[in-house]
Image (cartoon, rainbow, N blue to C red):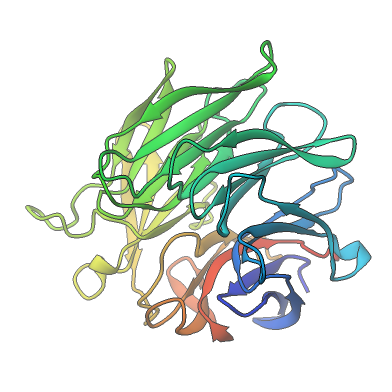
Amino acid sequence: MSGMEILTAPYTCHRFQAWENYGSAWYNDADIPITSGAVMDIEIFDMDLDGRNEVVVAETIVEGTETGIVEIFDFDYGTSPVDTLYLPEGLTGAVVCIAVGNFDADSDIEIAGIASLGGAVIWDKVDGEYQVALLILERHFIDLVTAGNLDDDAELEIVFGFGWDPVHCDVVLYDYDLGLDTWVNTANYSNFTPDSWFYHMEINDVDENGIGEIYLVYKDDPFKILTYTDGELVDFWTVPDVVAGTDVGNVGFSFATGDVTNDGKMDLVIYSPEWDGLVTGFRVYEFDEQLGFVNTYNFDNPGMMNIFGDQMVIGDIDGDSMNELVVCGGPGGIYSEGMMYIFRYNTLIFSAELNANESNCIAIGDYDNDA
């Protein structure tokens, strides 16, 4: 046992799964029930800053209500949630995406959530209770939220992806202003094809300059990276065509960041079904200070066929000081038979059936603090 687990969340199965490593294999070690029908997003994080992790779960609409919920699990106290957050008045639908972190540089952890039928919320913990710190109601559809440091100050930035708009779709950045003691919309980016949606977005520092960038996949546009420069969100890099003279391969469906090559440098792994049978399913990029992002190697999709959104993650899941790439997928659609695949470098080292529908999301970490 490595102490690091994999969490998967088969769609409409009223639970999430924990996979534990034993030797060269991973086993479905626990099934944790949730209140609603399905998990939409999942995070492993030390929510109360006691040095032990909790699991934060975004869920679909609870039966008999019009809204989804966020549940927090602390496995020091069993498998029932220790806290439940309800969408505030004005927001309805499932909670489709969450981000967690110390956004405002105070002494507690905040949670940002997206409602599937429009709007977003940030919850802040005040006197031991979560309260609404920011409520966004003016936009109909928001697909994604992520958080990270884009400007090297004390606070984290919150970035929302606004999709499904017939006129314009946006990346919208909020920053916490310590002087004003409130959240401020400081920058927007709108160079997207209208009336489409975001698959996945995260903030990371693949070029290792100490300041994060926004990495995102948007359904009808090339994979791109944005930076927050001089108060504006600007283009930093767009994945080039992989077949000269065509647009084949420049539209990603999912991605992950981390040192997948185990050479001490951060990598970017992008997946697109357009590459299957033509170029390849997965393409790995590494940042070079002179050349920029360089495609270092590629490897094939072993029959997963359907991979999108938050279904890829990189980390050391077996305690051998070597990172692996963990991918969830299925033969087509969220109601198809779910699979989990684990790669080391470009070699498939393990696969397993989820014995349920395809997983919406995946997370790795010591969720039960057994390390």
